[in-house]
Image (cartoon, rainbow, N blue to C red; front, top):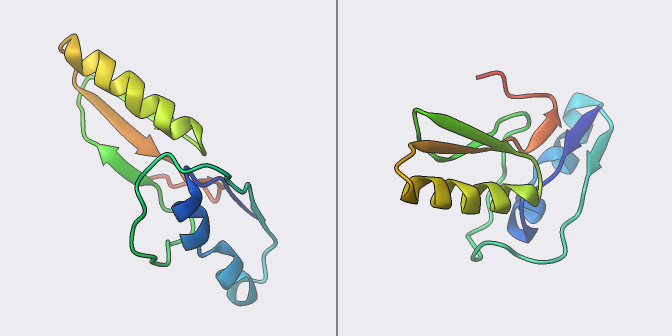
Length: 100
């Protein structure tokens, strides 16, 4: 089973899980999003099980799943003001989990 939770509407539309179901013969669960937290982007197919690095950092890593990713970005900005080097990762999928 594929379990995904996009961070915004555009990611939900771009999710490749439903398109890949016929290839993987897996069931797909996607938590739909109502309101956008990020500006609209050009549609693209997202790879299943691959997270998205939103910012690099070497002291703290914030990993978000779904709409909570935006709160993680906001927390990273506040921590950066205090001098912390913060990375933010959008996990995208709970299953399969991106181990890289």
